[in-house]
Image (tube, rainbow, N blue to C red; front, side):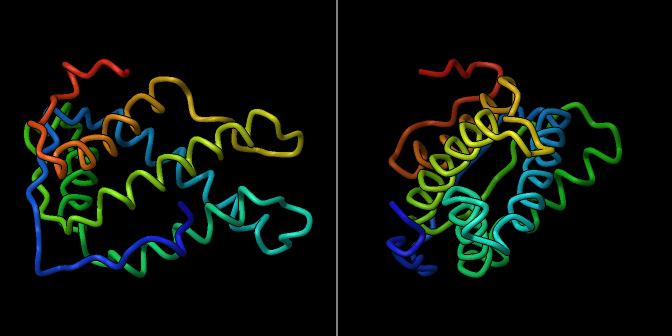
Length: 164
């Protein structure tokens, strides 16, 4: 599904999502890697003919998600940054209230980041490497918790997560 096909979120129907035992250091490394990737892809996207489809698609998706979900998760992101700066090992329960459409957005974002990893593995002129395995696992858990809990599943703590 492309970002153009994402349905707009209905902010009148919200659901609770709880990320349990969030490892702050792994989150910080994941955030740092993703930020590096996005910066490099944004530069590459300035010339779509030279960069290829994946950098343009990821850059556009991030723009769409940022505009569409502005403010959703801001408090939680601030908690994560504060915990990282304080050297806190984990956040026991990072609670969100999100629209149901967040599930679709997480699926599209996860698929696009997976495609970006493949692109990085194949690329010859990239500074950013593919996401390390531990950070991929964390990303899949993090995004998957939104998808699963919106569908009605119970939260799965990071310590109990085993990828399928």
